Image 1 (cartoon, one colour):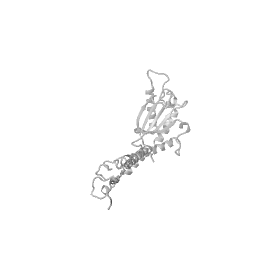
Image 2 (image 1 turned 60 degrees about the vertical axis):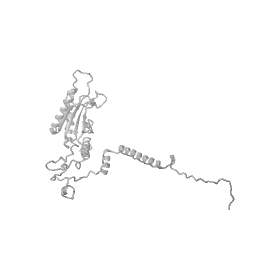
Image 3 (image 1 turned 180 degrees about the vertical axis):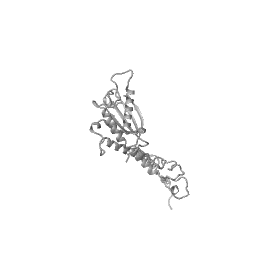
Image 4 (image 1 turned 90 degrees about the horizontal axis):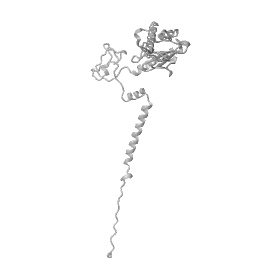
Length: 286
């Protein structure tokens, strides 16, 4: 039997330490990783939007949301459109976007959600304009332009269409000084333009431009002169074989849009013949 003692008993207290408090936890790391991932995806999206063209973005959008014909009204058949083709001329689709004999479109196909792609029409117009430029510059196999008049022609494609610019040079004017009487150079140019533009059926707009007068006049003739010269070119094109119903606009721009910084430069005497886009413009004739 143990002898009695006056010593106090020894008590051992074990303290359990648990983590996760304050900055020692790991949950914030998961949230931060999600945030960084979202920011990376956002900046990649911004970069892609800036680095791709409109046509490429449309292709990406169509990948996730395909533009395919969907039959929204039952036709009593398991096949789309009741077994009929959406492009059939004798089929009247119940969704109102099909092509029919009664309401046929120019392209004779549906032009709604399943119809003609405007991008395709733009591509056809660009191809036609490029072919005309090749002919005008003498690179289209058959040269319709002599070296003498080639230096008086500049072409460019704009949102409005193909612009064919005929301009004067020092010693080689298009019109008689101060009037709208054409020179032999302009007669040759308009005859050639009429032959080339006869390959397409686009409508035509004509704009006349003149250089500024060296002296300020009370009755400045630049407006009337530019309009008269544009009208003269219209008549020359018609006499050279251009159909009158293709000519849609004849305007005079006076000296308000000079081609060169010097408003009195001879180069500012010019006529712009624009082959207008017809929705997308006419194509080359066979």
